[in-house]
Each structure stands twice: as C-alpha cells, then as structure tokens.
Image (cartoon, rainbow, N blue to C red; front, side, top):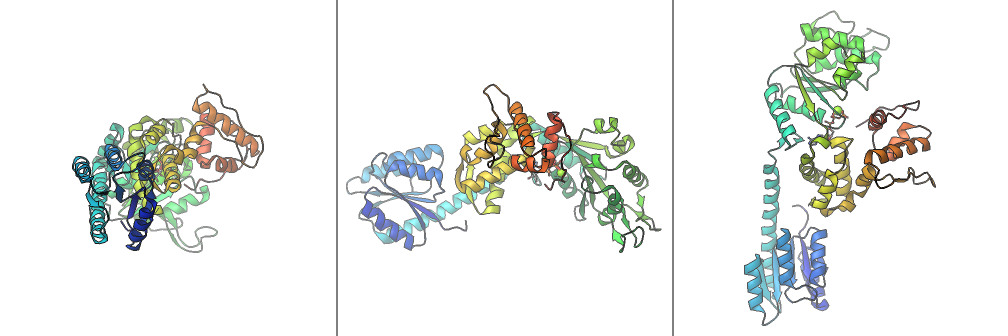
Length: 471
Ligand SMILES: Nc1ncnc2c1ncn2[C@@H]1O[C@H](COP(=O)(O)OP(=O)(O)OP(=O)(O)O)[C@@H](O)[C@H]1O
Ligand SMILES: [Mg+2]
C-alpha cells in the first residue's frame, strides 16, 4: 500500500472529534469523521478505511453494534475503541467477542494512541497483502492473462497446455471479444518457442495489395514504392509464433500462397530469389464460422484443413456466465493498478446485474464497463450505480444523442433486451444519416461490434462509411 493509511474517527462529541482529527492528521494519516455509528458504517462501506477509532457510546448505533455489523459483512478493519470511565467491561466484552483490536480509556493518552494506530496500520497492511495473495491463489482459473473457472474455459486451458508445446497449427474461433488473441499469446507463452518472437498480423486491416509483402517481405524495387528491402512477418516470427488474426478476411490469392508455404515450409521475399526456411508456428483466428466462410467462398477449404489441426473454440461470454464474477474481480485489480484507484470488490447486486446481461461484445465489453465503473467509484465497493451507463446501454435504450431534442426511442416492459437494442441501433443510425462510425461512437461500441449487430439483427448494412476498428 503506497497511499497513506486512512483512519475513521467515530465520535459524537464534536470538540473531541476535532481534537482527535487534528492530532491524527498531524501523524500523517488521512482522516474521515463520523458523528454516530450509522454514519461510520456508511463511510466504511463507501470508502476504504484502514483503521477505525471509535467511541463506544454513540447515538443511533453504538460501537458494539458497529463492530458487530462490520464483522457480519466481513469488513472489519483493526478497530480501537474509546471508552468513558465505567464502561470498561463492555469494551472488553466487545473486543473479545468481535475481534476488536484494542481499547483506550478516556481521556485519551496520545502516546498510547499513536502507538496503537501504528500497530493497527501494520496489521491492516498484512491483511491487505494476504487478501491480495488469496485472490491470486484462488485463480486456479488463470492461464496467462486468460481468466475462466467455467468448465468450458477449464477445458480450453487444458487444451492450450496440451497443444502449446507441439508445432501444430491452431485455429481459434469465437465471437469478437471472447479472448482469441489472449489464447494465441498463451499458446506462444506455453510453447518451446516462448523465448522467440510473437508476431501478429491483422488480415482485415491490410489492403489486399500490401498483405503479401507484409507477410513475406520484399526486396528493394520489387514493386512501385518498394524503396527499401523489408522483412515480412514470416521472417520476423522465425523461431517464434506467427498469429494470423481475422483469417476469414484474408484475400483468396493470399490464402493460396499461404497454403503453399505451410505445405513445404519455404518462402521468398517478394522479388527475392533466395528461398528461406519458415521455422514458424502458425496460429490463426477468425470471428466468423469457418464452415460458413467456406460455403460463401471466402475461406479456402484446403487452407482451413491445413490450419485446423487443432481448433480452439471460445464460447461467447453469455454461455459461461459463471466466469463473469471472476473476470470482474481480476479486472478490478488490473484497473486499480492502471488508474491508481482503490476499489475493493464488486457488490453482489452488481455481479447479479452483470450476469444477467447478454454481452454481445463479450469480455472486451465487460472489461470496458468494469474499467469505467472503477474510475467512477474510485474506491470502496462497486455498485450497480457506478456501472449504470454500461448496464443501461445493454438494457434500456437512452436518447440517441444528447444534443438532439426528441429522437428517443420508446421501450416497453415486455420487450426483450435484443428488441430494445435493435430499436436503439435503428434510431441512432437514422439520426446519423446511416453514418456507422458516428452511430457506433454514440452507442459506445466499436464499429466492428456495430456491424456484427447489424448482421445479427439483419438490419440493412446499406451504404455508410466504414472504418477499421482499433480495438
Ligand atoms: N478470458 C479472459 N480473461 C480475461 N480477460 C479477457 C478474457 N477474454 C478476453 N479478455 C479481455 O477482452 C479483451 C479482448 O480480448 P481479445 O482481443 O483476445 O478478443 P478477440 O477474441 O481477439 O476479439 P476480436 O475478434 O474482436 O479481435 C482482452 O484485451 C482482455 O482484456
Ligand atoms: Mg482479436
């Protein structure tokens, strides 16, 4: 814990509260204050409090009841009870019964208080570290950056561990945002090639004219614009893994060339004479159904069979909802590190709400919702209100554009989320004059996800701008 410790002072005598706050602040602690037990409980749930300094006798809820409730919630930081003359017995009973930390009789001896707060801080630090360790250990369901305790994901982890050390080609399928790239990286990390490079190429993002030189490289002057010799991905990935992302978007002539390379493991740079040995492990991914792509003539069947030595299919998140709380928990940790926040966990109300959604954007969408919620909350327990935007977006259409008056869509009870979402997408597209990039940005999804949804809802793809998705 790099941040300074935060002490909550619960004391109904305001003068005494002021005095203690001043003293404790001067010892370099952050201080929060409460005038009664109820306020204290509320603060403890909203903020991360490291140490509690509480009066025993307080209005609304006394120190004993406060500790009792905190203990029941499993959120009892080290607590120092302050007792007035004559209530020692109750203080001792409270400490004993409820694992309070210590007690001090009023008037408070400042030397003793400083010492106790220091000790309480040390205990708190240990507890937090233990919690962090426990959290990591409980993730048996972790492989690289992949999290999943569902049976489906456990089977995938086992398959990855089994296939990774071989040099067999692997085809990863699954909807957008299900973690295909993470699987590709896990395959590399668990292979004998892990010390070598992992080179990813996005077949959808490259114009047809460039993809061949991207993969095979070219010699200087091999085509107009080839001013320099260029090393291609195949060469860059020597002794490592070449990840061909969005294989379904690879132009057919390129597919034929790739197949030839896979067959005899030799290739040349464009315009080059020298044949090179391809010592690469190929992992490919597609978010389309390969059988369908083959039928539509977009994927060569022979290439498919060559790459499909092993297939790893990632089910959509909605089919493995019991992974959601674990993914959320882990992402809270990641996001705390990224944003310097102190969020502790997600409330069960939020977990339930998240598990009820369809997650068309799969784990990526969930990650974005958690990230936003962590930033909004900053600390304490994540509640549905912190993720309201993400939840609402999936459940109830909002006005298409805040600047536009009117332009909303009506949703009625009884409508499914899919129907409501479809209505919202239609209305937003109408509003933007079928500009999909703007519509996607208003909706808070990637253009790619929008296209997926359009296809799913069979809304006309029509004309409109197309922009490559960056995420
Ligand atoms: N099982 C998982 N555990 C933890 N995080 C995950 C998991 N799956 C996906 N993610 C998160 O979702 C993000 C998207 O995953 P990834 O890029 O691998 O998806 P993808 O299947 O390649 O999607 P696309 O088809 O759109 O490229 C990752 O960056 C990661 O944050
Ligand atoms: Mg991907």
